[in-house]
Image 1: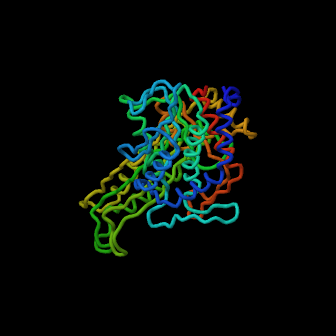
Image 2: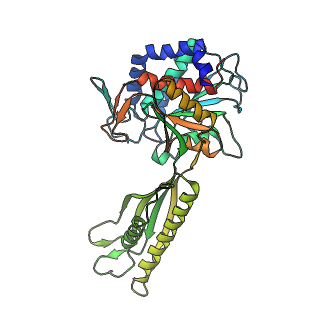
Image 3: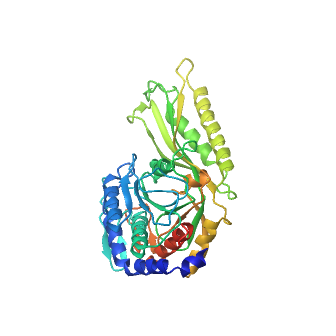
Length: 407
């Protein structure tokens, strides 16, 4: 499959365009990174991406009901989708997420120091968005003919609390799908070797214990929500770690109470559970749920007789599905071949990306880095260096062209 793409003259022209436009792509990357896009507030960045997609010549560019920006690449040879028509199953989706982990209070301006761009979100995922635009521009410039149309999608809500909201909306519920692509390719961050084909599942909970509260001296002996939180966290921390399949259980935030001399009426903590395997995640979740109840019961046993018991509220705030696209699938094998074609060894990997949702729905999906080197992800000191940056975008172009059946 990849050999035919490598021989395709128009794909070769598209590759050359990407390589010639390297500095322009860096400029787009810096410009997009400097537009704040906290999860849930991606509209300004989305509007700029939409302008770029219109400028490069994609069709039917628009923002959908949740803020995803969509645009079509459709040629005379494309089947299954017509301009502005309902979506069908024949397309290839190429996506990159709009949002960052940073709040609106953070300065997201970009500084250039030699070969390095520095700024929060400069790689994750301004790089992916710039690559998305670059590939679309290259396809249009070279007039690559594809049997399958390509839907370009800049998605909202990929990070943290977004819980993959954008891609869930893009694909629709399993019983009422809006589109079932033949392949889904997510552009996420930097890199040229990693191929994410295993979806890292995650469940996130806000656990809150409620009690009567009272003065820390006068009411001492009532059931204390903070004690229950402590008991639960100690037990969760003692759950053995597993390496095959790998699982993780982390308390990531906690709080409660109103003052130094008051027993809190409420205490809470946030919990992040992860696993590569759906069955292992279910088992871990069940063990944690049992611990939460045990902590409640133990604290209630220690309260002064006649006082009110604690209650518990466990609210799921995130649920990212796990699964995999088999390494033998043509999409994964094409990504492997494309990585070799640009002169690098591949690394098959597991991560939590927009590809989680299509994988869980049975759609072949991978996530690819968009070239270059990066560091300090999810920190204000995040940086990007454009070492072989164009090659990373070329790799994604080759995979996209192959799956769209370039002619």
